[in-house]
Image 1 (tube, rainbow, N blue to C red):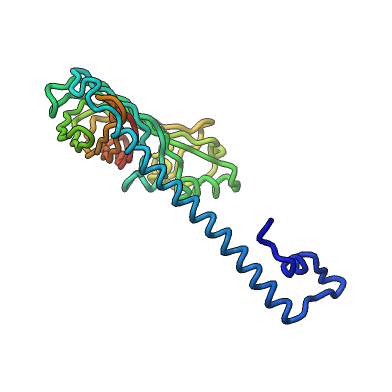
Image 2 (image 1 turned 120 degrees about the vertical axis):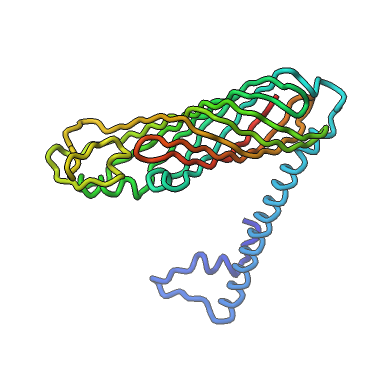
Length: 271
């Protein structure tokens, strides 16, 4: 490395076991050399971060600079494909952590501002430590995992206000939301466990207090009518009518013993 000075090299090859120690003055010089190395590396990382930011800013700018006269900006059919990141809300967050999945939709544009869209959203939910802790205690092992799945089928109305390059829209409607949850290991049969909502979430049943532990596999499923609604922003990418979008959406359904409440943030492409 070209930033390592000769004085700093002495420090790197010194051997404390053999009693070879640099003098006080030389130690100061070597300390300044190390600080210079740290400063240079920090500057390189800073420049790389700035370069990455400029690339992210320049990418949509380049898209906007393309010929905006090409393509049909008001098609009759609309479709989308995105990747939603979900954040469970109370009470769902007591049992599930972050989630990641896919969403897609297709619909009909009444005009430039109004559309009806049918959508499907799937999200894989990672189990929270709080949801797994009772099973780790009962099994006396940390070797247990779990996850959930959320499937949402929705029929939505979309109101959009957009120009040639950017826009904003509001979307929402009813639907059917289906939730599943599964655990990698079951509690051994006959283990005394007091009933609590966490066991119902994973699919256990309770009878007069204790949890019934006669299952060899643990899973649950529940579906219910629900609602969803949110807001999104679009930006023109290349030839019309293709647009990138970012969106925040709220989902709710009274599924089983625990209601499903999710807040999703989606990035995708729309036609």
